[in-house]
Image (tube, rainbow, N blue to C red):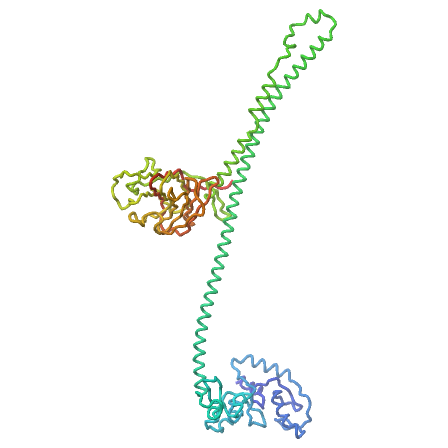
Amino acid sequence: MASAGLRDELDCSICLNLYTNPVTLRCGHNFCRVCIDRVLDTQDQSGIYSCPECRVKSPKQPLQRNITLHNVVEHFRSTQPHQEKVTGIYCTYCVDSPVPAVKSCLHCEASLCDKHLRVHNKSPEHVLSEPRTSLENRKCSVHQKVLEYYCTEDAACICVSCSLAGEHRGHQVEMMDEASEKKKKKLRNVFQKLITKREKTEKRVQSLEERRRKAQEKADGEVERVDVLFIAIRRQLDDLEKKVLSEISRQEKEESLSLSALIHQLEIKKDELSRKMKHIEELCNMTDPLTVLQEPDTGDLCDPEEGGGDEDTGGHDKAHDVDVDGIAGMLHKGFSDILTYLPSISLAKPKEIEIYEEGPADILLDVNTAANDILISKNLKTATWTKITQNRPETAKRFQSPQVMSSRRFTSGRHYWDVEISRSRDWMVGGCYPSIDRRGDRSHIGENNKSWSLCGGLEYKNQCTVRHDSKDVLLPHQVSSNRVRICLDYGAGQLSFYELCDPIRHLHTFTTTFTEPLHAVLCVWGGSIKILGGGAAVRKRPQ
């Protein structure tokens, strides 16, 4: 109730709405500035101005803004959840005081308040619309009649005269409301299509952002892996440097001690020679022949051919010099080891840097999987193709083609194995799942999605290929060495092939997600393949 009473006090007596920019007359009454300006403008002809409330007359003067009342109205307005929307359009027929219009008549070109709307003509030509300030654009510029129709051929709004006698005579026309609904329907269809396109665009943007994020993460991961790789290489280089410098220092110290001992012996010998020289010189300076002749035998003093010191020294120098060739060999071997075991270097995060050294060779062939045209050596290391059938029992595990699997299977960690191929017409090495088919053309390693292989042989003319799921990738360069290393990183899903030349050369890496244990597998025609060594990665913490 208090709020309702306050509202009554804050309403302008002219527009009956909340004060807008309120001003105060000399009599003390308040009005909206627009409302009182309208009233005073109607009184300009008489020259006498009076308050609409109390009719007190006064000369026209500048209106004083009521700041306090303005602040009270704004505060009241902000506390009300719903306020009447004031359009600023007033009834054409309310002359004494402006009253907000609720409708506009297109035929009469007038705006109407509630009171005048009730008595307004209801005939069809009187078209009502929302309150409008200008009604000229609602009439035909030629005939000055209300636009009621829509010409579909010219896409223009027309009046009845345009349709009957004007330039649109004979054209197909529709009522404006009907044409408007049709256009709205089309617009709604377009709107739905735009919504669909926008959703697709948003999904595309999200997909690209996700790709960008993943690319950034992958790049960051690769940068981290490369940093770790070079840290490990530098660590090994530092170790090699310390080892070589230590060997040089050892040889230098050994040489220095040996030479110091020899110098000491020669110094003693030099002093002895000096003593003898002095004694001989004294004898030579004596004038008494008896004294000279009475000296003991001096043959050892006078023998000019005495020697042995120079030869001994020369022999020592030749035997104990710094071994330059040995140092060079140590450096060469150290660099070769770094390149050879590069695939075994850990690529863990920097906080988990580890160096991996060669572990025990544990790759043995499983005779139970060997085909009958494959001969397995007693040490289970060599597979040789043979024309003589081995008459092994046919089982579900045995390959029909000349292949054999390892008995060891890998389910985690990093491992490698080296193989040597001896003049084989065709050969394949790699890895496979235990669920690989053992019969049929699709049982060859690389011809299915359960195996990965490197293929070569005399018929390939040293041009090797890698194969998975019957898809071949021809390697860009020839493989001249008959030794190959296969490296497995089970957790990272990588199976890599390297040529064991000097330096070691990377051939190809398969990347996947392993879903089964992995076995080493060999396939050979017209030759043999021998497993030279291999093993698991043995962790060694950096010193």
